[in-house]
Length: 250
Image (cartoon, rainbow, N blue to C red; front, side, top):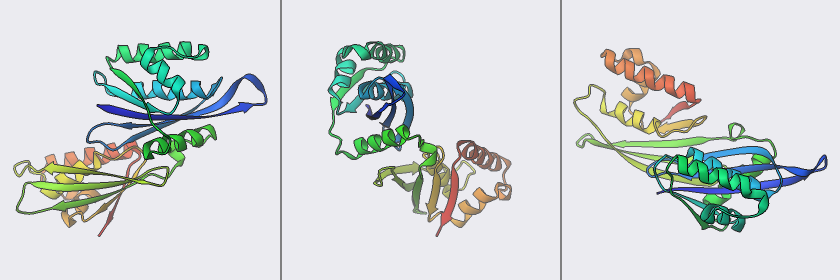
């Protein structure tokens, strides 16, 4: 099951009696993937509307055809998600959430979560920063990757340590199966698998990558086989498109 932790931040505007400036933030968790953080700013009548917008964006970002549990500390939002009803100001947005979930065949659930949890704290931080006009692109994002490969096995251990906006760290462990007949050196296979877990705009700091993997990543033309060159060039092009930078240490 997928999980979304949502929160909002809202402030009245002196220039408007009906709308204030709001920010919403969410942390989307999917099995075997690093958490995805999304945030945005909007004009909203109250904090509830800003947080329900975070729910809508979570549904939009979640995989279709799978269950999604929304975690929030807002009882009005829980009523909208779980029962399809809530305060009058949320009627239209609540209907939009339900329609989006139905269109994507997402089974939507709601659960109370205190703000003291790390994912809730991250969502709260994202919402506050969005309300102030600070988007995720302006927040530092870095993932440290440790690659451990045993020559006698056909498996590599990839550990990722991801720095969160709240200052905490999240870790994920991936076991990568290596194909000895692919033509791609095993150490390069492990590196490419690790980079597939990177998020847009991140700097990926790779530790203990083999000299072969590092050399071929930096200069794909060194690969003897055209197929390996093409795979490396495609991976580098995707990283550039997503704004992912790769650094090697050790």
